[in-house]
Every structure is written in structure tokens, then in C-alpha cells.
Amino acid sequence: MQKTINWLLNIVILVSVVFSINILSQRMTAEHNFTNIQVAVRYQDILHIIEYTDYELDEVLDIFLELGVNNITVEENVLLPEYYSVSNAKDFVTSDLARGYIDIVKEEEYRLVIEAIDEVTLDRIYDNLVTKGVTVTRDGDYLNIFSQRPYKNLTQLGTGFDIEALTYLANRGFEISPEIRGFTSYSEYGIQTLIDQLEQIPNLGHLLFDGTRIPAYTEANMIKFAREYGFAYMEFFSDTQEGYITLSRRIEQDGVYNVIRMFSPDKLSHIKASGILDTLELALVERNVRAFGFVLPNTGGVEKDFETLQDEISGFVESALGFGYTLDTDIEMKGWPVASRKQLLVIGLGAVAMFMKIIAMTQFAIIGYLAGIGGTLYYVALLLSSKIDAMQSMAFVTTVVFSSYGVLLCIDPPKKKSLTLALMHYCKITLVTFMGIAIMAALISEYSFAIGVNLYKGVKASHVLPLIIVAGMIIVTRWKEIVEEVKKLLKINWKYLVGFGILGVFVVYTVVTIYVSRTGNTTQIPELEALLRATLDDTLGIRPRTKEFMIGHPFMILGLYMSYKGFRWPVLVVGTIGQLSMINTFAHIHTPLIVSGIRTGYGIAMGVIIGIGFIIVYEVVTKIISKVISRWNIKLT
Image 1 (tube, rainbow, N blue to C red):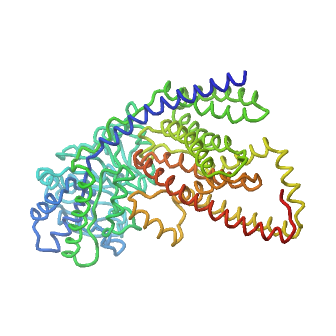
Image 2 (image 1 turned 90 degrees about the vertical axis):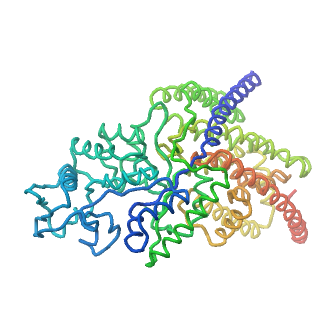
Image 3 (image 1 turned 135 degrees about the vertical axis):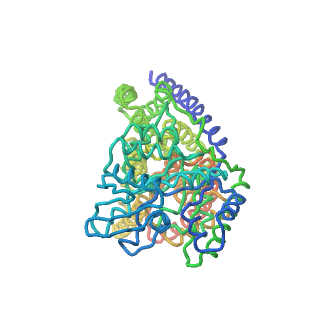
């Protein structure tokens, strides 16, 4: 009966893998065809160049067009430059005062009186400030703006865009991406006023949002506008903005999100404006970023900075074209797979079946089958009520059970040590892991996971649970053998036993602590590891994960080679790190599948080589230890 059930579970897993491969093939096709890239410069940098050099506007635009620039990002104007209140000339040229659009007539403690160069500018400033909660009255050709000195809010609230200037840029062949400044007080009329103004811009591109909060992200007219033109997910910035996830979800239509990934040092204080070609290439190849914003360096010499900016753009464009990418403004992801609930049900059942197979290895098989049935019913209910939660939950389960099961198949040692047999078992374990990779990646291969709207949950737990499961299953299923091994160890002189025990606990604690703390992207890496990473990047192009080729795979091969259970089992537990790390590599949905595959392949190849080296060292060390033990008259067998 149990054999029949096992075969049925195997069939369920195979069907799940087939469905998964179908989803992943669609995703790989979409990624392969996703070759258009956008190169952007900032409008304020253009103004800065023509203000402080002898270049004319058309000369600067011609240079950028020749370099391949096809987009200009434009930050919304403010009334006063920031230095007006905090002695800081940052983005000076984006203010109406600095541009010469207004003159200040009178400054009072609670009132600022201005006049504008024309009626259009006066209307623009009035409409934008009033609809954002500022009290403004008109007095002929003047505006009375009620704000307390030093008028800080007037250095932050947007006053709209210079449509005439942006129309000229668009007519020169650039796509225009407006960057809307943040605001909290508004009316529905105020939002529509801003939208109506933006829609006057020809060749309007995706939207950008400045500040810690996306304005009006719950308003119907903003949602409709963002859905039509799309907006940018700024790397390392947008995920911190209030409203990003909400707005992204509300513009979604049938699994399609008009959101593009963009990288720019503009919002990142820790990244320089120049000398970042490697960073840009990494974002292009390994993060599915297709919009790249370049920033004028700020070294004090504008002419020299402009030359540096040209070199940065030229170097990146040349590199991107060499990789096979094309310069284009149409950078919306197309053809990305959207799995139906029925497909997700079939795919998720593979993880449930694998869970049952693990429990069936113990004397509690019937409990595992019942739990699997209950888990299936819960998964179905979750799919119907919250599709994303179901995908996230089952992806986590898949990672845990598949990275554990292959190792559990090979916990019993061979009668005789054999490198060939160890490598065969390693291939068997890795095959099981790749089945898990297919299922897990298919479960979360919606585009929302690639733009940070939804995330793979349980990263830390999925790096620890498989180790606990493998260790726990060894204890549960091999308890009698463990007791026998302990009895043998107790025959050793207790002083040596305590010494080795303390050393072993210290080593295990250190390895686990470093391993868990290094999981994720927030921990600062040691200088030596940084050097190793840089070397691998330069040599291989795509760097394998350190925890795989330096820890997981070598220890797995060493453990599979060992015939002494007392050594084999703990080493196999450590070796499990490589298997679960491989699955987690493919949980980075923003990384193209082919890149994750190459990274994993490099990790396996290098891990096998290092693992064979571990075996050689092990053989040498055990011979030395055997001689020492024979002198102590200690018997382990």
C-alpha cells in the first residue's frame, strides 16, 4: 500500500514539475525578448550645464542624442530654491525664482508677495499651490502667498511644470518623465489639475515620484493616470515610499503591471554619480533593470563634470549594446506569465506530495498523509481567498521540503568510501533540488514579485528549517545507531571528549551564526570576501554564491564520501546549506532565470572541485589523527 502511495506521490511531483517548466519557459521567453533599454538624464543637469558653461541648449541636447540618451527626467518646479530656507543650493535650477519665472515683491513674516513673468506662469503657480493646501490670493498681477518665514513649504511643494520648455525637449526626440514632488494636502480637483497639466506634455513617459510618500496614491484619477503611463520602481528607493505597493496593485490589470525598474544614483547617497559602470552593468544583466538615469557629478568644475557624464553614458551604452540590448523608450515588460489558480494548484501539490514523502520516512506516515490532505484543502481555500498569500506560502514550503528530501535519501553511509559513489549521490540530491527550484520559481514568477510589490517570505526561516529537518530526521529515524555511536565516544578519555566537544560546539555555533547573519542583502561583508567576490565577478562575469561553493557543496560531497556515521551525519547537515541556497537563488525573481542558472552552475562546478579538495584533506588529516589516537589507545570502532 505504501509503495502505491509513494508512486502516486511521485507522479504528482512530476506533473507539478512539468507545469512549472511550462510557466518558467514563458518567463524565460519574456526575459529573452526584454532587450530594450532607456538612458535618461536630468533636466536640472541640462540647465546647470548651460548656466555655467558656454554650451547652448541645442548643443547639449545634440550631444546627449548622439550618445544614445532617449529620456529626460524632469523634477517638478518649486517656488523658492532650497537655499532660501536652509542655506543649501541643491537643485537650485528647479525653482521658479532661480529660473527667473517670478520676482519677489515683498517678504513678510506670514506673507510672501510675488509677480510672474506672464499670466500662464501666474496661473500655474496659483493652481498648484492652492490645490495643495496653501492659502493664496490674487491681486491683479501679484500673488499673496500666506506662509511663515522662512517659507520652508514653498521650497518643497511643487508648482507644476514648464510645459513650453518640455514640449521643446519632446519635439527634439526625447521622452519626458515627470518627477512629481510629494504633498499630503490635496483635493480631487487639485490632483486632476496636475494630471491635466502633465497630459499637455508630448511624448510623455513613465512617472517618477519624489519624497517618502507617493501623493494621492488612493485617488481614482491618479490610479487611472499611472495605469496609462506607468511609473518607475527606483532601485533601493521606491520600496521605502509610502503608497508604492498600494498604487502598484491598483494599476494591475490581469496580472500586468505598468511598472518599470529604474536605476539612478539620483536618490542614492551611497552611490557616486561617476565611476559606477560595473554597478550599472550589474543592474542591467542581473536585476532586469531597463531604465538608467545618469546624474551630473558635482566636483565644482561643471565643464569637466559634463565631460565625465558623457564618458559614463558612452561607456554604459557601448557595453549594453555589446550585450545585445537595444536603445528604445518602449521598455514595458511584455509576455510575463500569469499563472491561473488551477495551474498554481497543480504546481503547489508537488510541494505537498514531497512533504508527505518526508513524513513517510518515519513511523508516522499516516499522520503525514492526513496532514498532506489537510494542507491541500487549506491551500485550495487560500488560493480562492488570497492568491498571493497562497503562492508565497507554498513557495516557502517547497524550498524547505525539497532542499531536505534529497539529503535524507542519502544519509546512510556506504560500506566502503567511494568518490564515484559520493558524486553519484550528490547528483541525485541536486536533481531533487532542481525539481524544487522549478516548482518554487513557478509559484512566484508573477511580475509583481520582480518589482517588489510582493515578496518571497520566510527567507531567514527557509535557511534554517531544512537544517533542522535533516538533523531531526536523522535523530528520529536513526536513534538506535546514534546511541551506539555515543557509547563508542564515551569510551574515549573524558578529558579529550570534553575538549573535542567544546571545540565542536564553538565551531558549529560560529558557522551557524555567520551563515544566518549573512543571509539576505543587509549584512556588511568582510574585506577578504569582498575581494573574492570582485575577483569572481571579473573572472566569471556572474558570481556564484559563496555559501554554495565554499560551504554547502563541498561539505555535502565530503559528507557523502564519509563512511563513519558519527562524522557523516553532521557534515551532511552542513552540506544541506548548498541545496537550500540554490533554491533561494531562484527566489530572486528580479534576476533573469538564465543568470540564476549560470550562477548556480558555477557554484556546483566550483563546489565539486573544492569538495574533492576537502576529501583529500580529510584523508590526510584522518591518517594523522589515527596515528595520534593509536598512541592514546582510543578505539572508535
